[in-house]
Image (cartoon, rainbow, N blue to C red):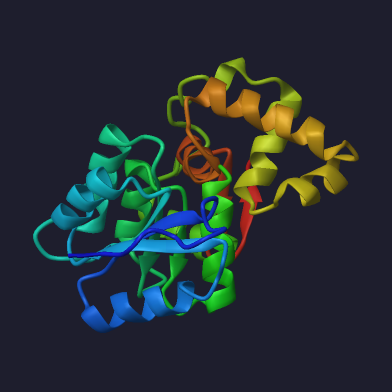
Length: 244
C-alpha cells in the first residue's frame, strides 16, 4: 500500500484518486498515466480490496479506480464496503475482459461505472472526472453484452417478471426516458430524440432514479433489463431494443 504526498500549489481542487490493482506494474502504470493531468491527484495505491478500504478511510479519495479481480478481497467486495462506509467516495471499476460478470456485480454493489483496462489514458482521465461530477460512466457496447449475459430478463411475454419497485410510479414520458438511458443514450442524445431541453432530461432522470431507488445511470440500466423494459438482441450482442 502506497500513500502519496499532498497536491502541490493550485491543485487543491484536483480530484483525489486512489488506484487499486493487484499487479504492481498496472498500479504504477495507471498512476503514471494520471499524474501529469493537473485536474487529478493520485493520493495512493493499494494491492487488494482490504487495503483499498483501509486506504480510502485514511486518505478520503474522491474516486477509487478499482480492479475487479484481486486476492484477499476482490473489487466487488471492496466496492460494497466503500458504498456503505464512504458513500461520497465513487468507484470506477476496471476489467480486463469485456464479458466479466464481476463488473455487473460491481455496479450492483455501488460502483459508478466501469471501463475495460485497455481504455486510452485520455478516456480514463475523462471518466474519472465524469464519475467525480456525479455521472455514471457506462460503455454502452460492453454494458449491453454484460447485461444480456448476466442479468436474467423475462423469457416469455405470457409470464412477465414482477415489476421493479417504483416502476408503476413512472409516467409514460419517464418510462420513455428510462428506455433511452438503457439503450446507451446520453443526456444530449435523449434531448434530441425527444425534442426537449437537456435540463428537462436531467429533471426526468432525477425523478426516475428516485422512483426506482437507484443511485446512478448504471443501476438504472440494470433495472431496465431486469424488469424487461429492454432486452438485448441475440445477434451481435452490441445492441438493445425496447420491449413492448
